Length: 94
Image (cartoon, rainbow, N blue to C red; front, top):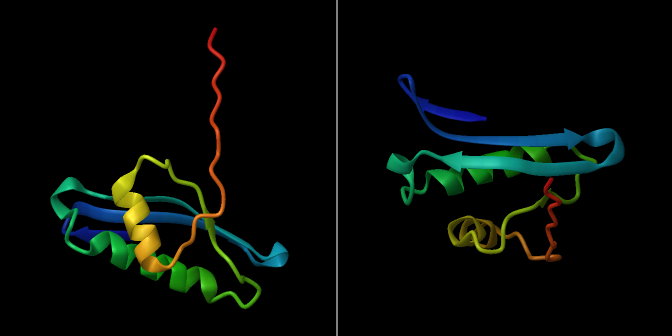
């Protein structure tokens, strides 16, 4: 999903839905700095959720976000998402 004004991208949401195995996930959502705190992120999220739940087999939507990303977590909680788990990230450098 993409929100634009003229050629300027205001916000986007990328999600995947596989109705055959009843899986849906929000992969990315972003809002241009000039449009943050305008409600556009919440609007994009709600539109993405509506689209994903339009598939009858989809009963839940999953997403992963950094715990420290306060603005994103605020929007997700406000939209009705509940924290399920906390993930640990590992890296192996050369």
